[in-house]
Amino acid sequence: MNQTTLAKAVETKGIGLHTAVPVQISLLPAPPDTGYVFRRTDLGDFEIPATVESVAHCSYATTLMRTGVMLSTVEHLLSALRGCGIDNAYIEVDNLEVPIMDGSAEAFAEMIENAGVVEQPLARRALMVRERVTVEAGNRRISIEPADAYEIDCTIDFPHPLIGVQHRSVILDNGSFARDIASARTFGFIEEVEALRRANLIRGGSLDNAIVLTKHGMLNETGLRFPDEFVRHKILDIVGDLALLGMSLLGRVEAERSGHLLHASLMSSLLRNRAACEIIDLPGTQEARASAPVC
Image (cartoon, helix red, strand yellow):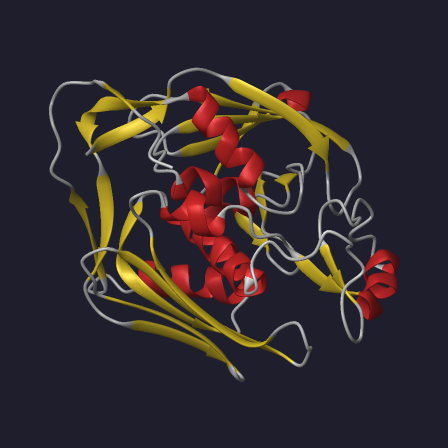
């Protein structure tokens, strides 16, 4: 498979989860070797590359920054791009946060499907993991080790009757992202809402874009999309954060109670260890051709 981009531009709009601001977002084709590049159209198309070096902070969302210009909550969109097999894209945003949509990556995956996917005349690059790298923080841990495909094995543990210990493993190929991961929504606990809003966070949060958990259940009347929707969303976050590596992965990720900060630490540790990974070209044709959406 060669590198891919979108066949045409597509756009949508929504609100920011943490800022509650209205946002217009467009996905556009980009040349080979571009990767993912955000453009703040409200700031003269100022570009922020979606790379590990651009990460500013990652507490309740992954935020990128370049020379003081920030863009927040990028992980769900990046998850859709990587999960659907897009290598190169420009993302135009007219405010300081990517819209939350319904709290999952499904709307972004549908945008990619509507745009179509075009194969480009350069081989796809991949980051091949050569040695195991592990990052820990208390009882939280994430590691990556050599594998022939991009696999994520994730375990979460929350003392809540709808969650408890959940485990899921997925190999990102053959449409598995759109089928099993993209529609899993973000979630939070009702007792944390007031504190988060005092910190100027989740001002755009609602039952339309998040699962809100009470002590014994959930406020949402629509129910869960999967019995293990919570661990599926954590996998969605991992895919989105690790998309900041800038290319496909050949490696097995094992995560236990991980979060955005640990994901960023893993990427930094992996890239600092020159013996731990290698950039390779995957086998591909030398002629561009149209292709059905990977997701």
